Image 1 (cartoon, rainbow, N blue to C red):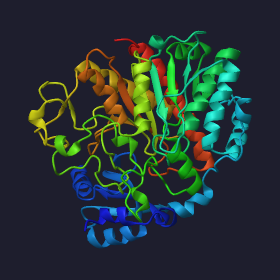
Image 2: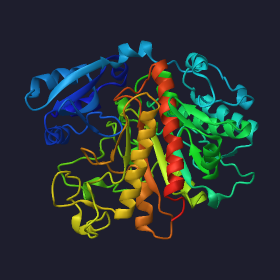
Image 3: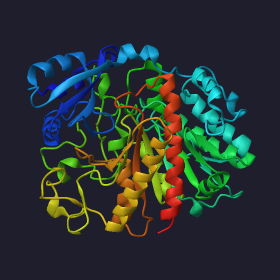
Amino acid sequence: MKVSTLLGLLPGTVIASDVLSVAFWAKEKNQLYDFISTNNEIDYGCRPVVIPADGEHKVHAVISEEQLSDLKRSLDPDIVRVETLHNINKRQTATAPIGKGDRFKGGKVAPRGLGTRKPSEYAGLQAAGIFNADEVYTAMKGLQKEYGMTLFTPPHKTFEGNTVIGGVANKAEKIKKDKQYIYFTSGIHARERGGPDNLIYFISDLLYANKHRKGLTYGNKKYSNKDVKTALGAGIVFIPMTNPDGVRYDQANSNLWRKNRNPKSARPNEPLSVGVDLNRNFDFMWNFTKYFDPSVSPASTNASSQAFYGTAPFSEPETRNMVWVYDEYPKIRWFIDVHSAAGTLLYSWGDDVDQSYDRKQNLFNPAYDGKRGIVDDEVYKEYIDQEDWDNVALQANLTTAAMEAVGGREYVPQQAVGLYPTSGASDDYSFSRWHKNKKVNKVYGYTMEFGYPTNFYPTSEEYIQNIIDTNAGFMEFILTAERIGLEG
């Protein structure tokens, strides 16, 4: 039995009691690649991300103490060694609390972000804690009441009967669906706490600053009121919590729950087999056993895996809701799906290394089925037009530079494939839509991973820093999008 398969056999209660944040180290990237290929069901977070450090390379993961013991016995430390960073369960006593009650009073009170506050005021937000799932809804209603922000509800209810809520932020009094060019989502992975807060506080900053004719300040990064108006003028469609069932479950149990709560594929006495990894459920090479080399597993067919891909592309209401937005707002050009925790901004493609010289090597060419995903080979690399490549890379570089400029920490821009391929992800699906059907708008898709590796439950201090980092990033992303172009 592979060490990695142990995770799928652990009872659900173990997740909350003996989970460790670790880093796997190797001198060469290909050594980590071989390790991940052999242990592809270890929980590497949103996706395996290689980080150069101290002349070596590392990838972060979440494993059990039992897995750690087995790995220490089986690994050759001269090739790959494992370092324990912290016990996640013990660390939970220091994490930011989940808010109690309803600070937004059913929508009578609007949220106000950090960009228009003094640092001395941050303590109040720290004390109030992370939004509970109900507060996401009342915060949105508060923005509607205070600023007249348009709300919408996508048509598909979740397995537990929850309705997803979204909003449109624009300086125009009347919202035109064909004049909205920016799309943000968060909360697709339930355990990545603070994502919905980051988005809601950012939108509240824009609306407050626009109403009161102010600029915004995020650490060392400042934006003028003119910048605020430019950002709102781009038209922002956003869904702060795409996976409400999962978020409620994670907040109630603090068990690092990642997936939704659909039990269709669940097996008796295997609580981890409930749910689908929504970020492997989009129609982008979803049937990975067809498209990828047999040696790689960008998703999983095992229902107990954190990367279980579901029963079909868009089998889940949550992913269908996210795609519905593209039909409702057909001119969306720029997309970010907000995640944690790695400190990166990822751009397409995520299935293989980018290249701009051979158009025949593309995701729709069946001649390359079964050959994709080997990052260091010359058999296949994913085609991207050079102009698109320049645009997505420039955006990633400028956005991460702004996130670093606030004074918090390093953020790395990189292609999504990184060390290891991914299938069924929201960013690649968004970019692939136009490549499949030229009648729809071209969308540049990104994954923003805020925070620190495998630190899904931030401390109160980290929670505030994450808001500042991401909000500067969102602002820079929109302003850069406006400069590169909102329309094709």
